[in-house]
Length: 146
Image (cartoon, rainbow, N blue to C red; front, side, top):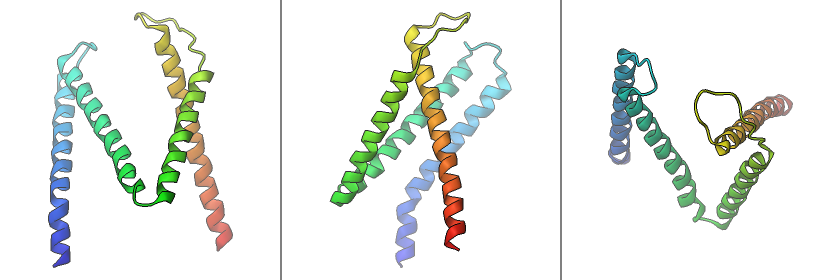
């Protein structure tokens, strides 16, 4: 009986997941069958706005679930605060280190856009490096435990 209730509770999430996937698939097919030749294509704009919506949804879900879980105990709340501070320090440090040097381009770009792009690259490099280090650490730790 309990499994049936759990399946019923998960059903709306599965339906939402399926709808989001189908809309993404349809837009993907529309964009790549239209074969846009410029960046001013209407199907391409629609597809990009849909991607922005999905990213916003993923960001909201990623932030909301830890927030709801954090208020269950003081230890989880402290861990969340430390995590938020670490993210602020990493992003702030990347922003301060980013040179924002302009490059030659045909489009008109604001200087702040170059700084933002450099900061995003620095954060990405740091996260990829952290992922590689954690993979190596996990493998070494697993080998030593055996």
